[in-house]
Amino acid sequence: MSIGDTRMGNYITDKVKHTKTHTDAEQKALLIATGKSRDTIRDHLIFSFAFGTGLRQFEIVALNIKDVFNETDTKQYVRLHTFKRSDKETKYQEIILPRDLRDKLMLFYKWKGEHGESLKAMAPLFLSQRGTRLSTRRLRSMYAEWEQVAGLTRHLSFHAMRHTACTAIYEQKNDLRLTQMFARHKSIDTTTRYTHPSDEAMLRAVSTLRC
Image (tube, rainbow, N blue to C red):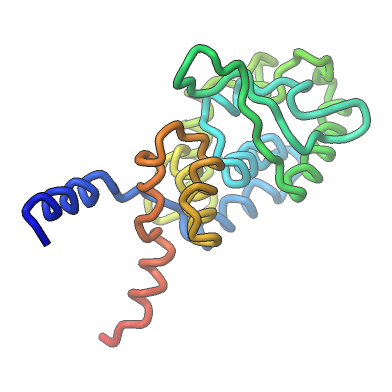
């Protein structure tokens, strides 16, 4: 290998940064904890959105009723009008809602109606206790609270759920372009961070060691 090749190899290695991800057990614990009661269905749906779509915090809180629901059912393809923009010409991005998430959303729609929350097209999907649009700040503090309730022994972040989703897509398909589409990255260089072994993969590997 030439000196030039060595430098390029180091460059690529430096660019692929380790991203913290939830293990299967941590992900399951969060979803179980938030799914035990109908009173916590909002938080459960938020976590399901993060794990199932890889949406960012501000993208989740910006969702309105019309973005997710049509007249008869949940939408399969959701258009995001609030997202991380790489250029001014892109007016929207589309994401696919997993079937399990769509089923949960129908239950949430019914719950919102029963609790007097607005189901008008431009009404926020996720409301705070004050009846206003949920903030990203509250989203982060809510996550920290549920970490404790779910019994997680290490502190991650809300954004780690996006990393978990994107890493899972890459590990399932080993397809960097597919992962780039899921993550909605303009540059595939950004997506290479998800080629790094996940925390779950490391946990499985270490568990086989004799000690």
